[in-house]
Length: 230
Length: 247
Image 1 (tube, helix red, strand yellow):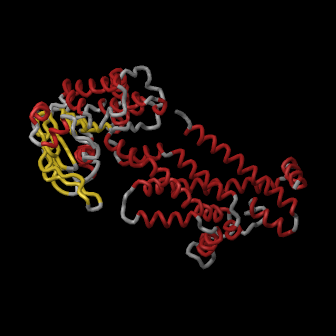
Image 2: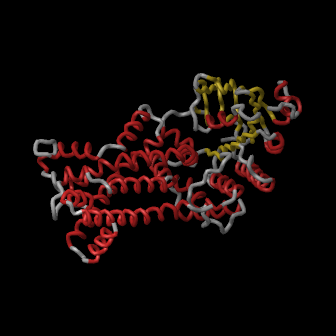
Image 3: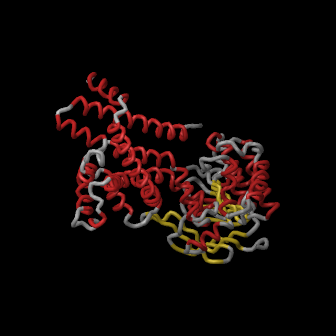
């Protein structure tokens, strides 16, 4: 373990170009996917949390199920879609960074939808009624709801990002773990473990954990800072 | 709307939840420019009636007329109508922003110019005794201050009908006096129709010109407040106004 920590520190201070490229790509893929998931998921989650429409229960159950979607299943689905004979085969996206972003967006979107819906539902009725009796139109109502549920929504984004940065199965399937092209921290850990280089794998794991800790600390401070008060 | 015209009319209005009828109002007519109290014991259906009247809940049956027209079903007409009235709830629901932004919310929804919003919000803050506190975060206000802001947010819109759902039940006597003064002032100076739900007999005596007494979901008696307090026709109303009806 100590050896792994020393290796991790050595790797970081060695300014190894490949390592920093892998870290950069991990961040790029997961951050892009979580931003896309937020763009789709926040409005959909707000509607789901707000609308007492028929079918909402069934949709909610479906979303909760997809929140636990196994990455390999998502990977398989996107792989089939992007493979040469797939519906999106002509786009030649398989084993590219774009494919990795697509599959991670698919994984994070249900999480953002589900947790946003819960955040909106907790405040939805009273905020909706207050905005309505003050004369708010549809857009202002939606904006007010998102604003009031923003800390819960930020929590949804944090949870989504947490899942993505640690995810390996889906990006491995559609990215291919190609050196210098689609290799990210998690797939590199798998590779080094298979090669028997446990120290390097552990070092990469520690770097991944530190990265997750750093990002989540920043997001948590934002959330806690905003939601505290009398 | 001229004084003493019927501004809200209910006919055979019913509300049921899960097949159980919780409100039945055969005939209600509320006149414009009056302060009407909806009085009754807790759980009688007062708030439900108020929520139906201000279009927050649809009735299960019967007819509701507002400003002489049937209550609309489509969103656009409903919004137009909602902009002619507003409600202050028992528990003030303030947006997690500044006091100023809370009071300005309805004016911004109506796309009023920024200069007009500043002037009107400042005047409202002065009325509720919170001048200079516009930049304060609403979540840092005390319960009484929060309810005053909720009222200012309604008053600044100069509604034709102001609905009040037990607006002072959680407040201390000083705040109760201040808020009641503001309801009366609005009614007197702008001719606003005020409809206040209360289970507080003393408040009903202080405020209401007309009264509706509701018991177990049924509108038992309506009429001028003085008459109801002195010569109530129904024994249940009589028991309530004499403080004998205990739940």
